[in-house]
Length: 294
Image (cartoon, rainbow, N blue to C red):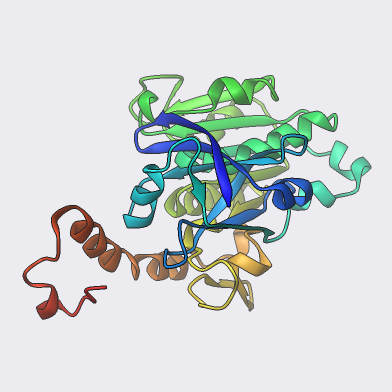
C-alpha cells in the first residue's frame, strides 16, 4: 500500500499529497508521471510527479478535483493509502538528458498555467540544482488560483506572476507576459509551456512567429497512461504519437492542437454524468441519454 504522509490545500480545488512510493522515488526524473488507483476497481489516474524525496522514499503529486475519481482521492487523509502507484512512466524532460555544455548556452523560460505549475516545478528545481538559471512565468485567472510562487522563487531569481484579472503581478495571461518580457529586451531561445491545452496552443502560435523553440506537455489528454487505450493519440508533424509513452513532452510547433482538443472534449460529457451521479444519485433520464449507469 502507498501511504499518504502529507495532504495540503494549495488553491481552489487544487491539492498536494506526499505519498510513500519507494521504487518511484528512487528512479523518477522531472517530466515523468505515475498512475494512481484508489482500489482494485477504481479508475487509473495519470498524475505528473511534482517532486520527490529519495531519502524519505516519497513522491509529491498535485491534483485538481474535476471528476469522480479526483473527488474520491480528495477523501484520502494522512495515514490512508492508495492501492497502486505505478511509475515512473513516460519520458523525462529532454533538458535533463541534454549535453551540459549545450544546455548552459540556452536562455530558457518556463511558462506554467494553472495546474501546469506542478509539472514545471521539478524541472525548474533540477535546473537550479545543476547550475542553470532560468526564467519562470506562473499564470492563473486570479491570485486565489496561484500556488507554488514562493516555492518556485527558491529555485529561480526570475519568477514572473501573471493574472488574467490583474489581481497580482502582470495584468494578462502568460502569453501576454512573455510578449511583454520580449518587448522589454529579454531574449529566449527555448520555451517550456505546460498548462491548459488552449494556453499551450496560443503560446506556440506566438513562439512560432518569433522563432523560439517550444516544448509542451500533453499530459492533459492522457487517460490510461500506458498506450493501451489510444485516448492520447496525437498528430505530431507527420507522425502519430501517444502522449503517455512517447511523451508527455513534444515539440509544440509540430502538434495539431485542434485535433488534440477535440479528442479531449470527447470525454467530458460522460465524466460530467458520473460526477452528477456521485453527488445526486443516478439521473432519472440516464437510460434515455445512453450514458452507462456504472
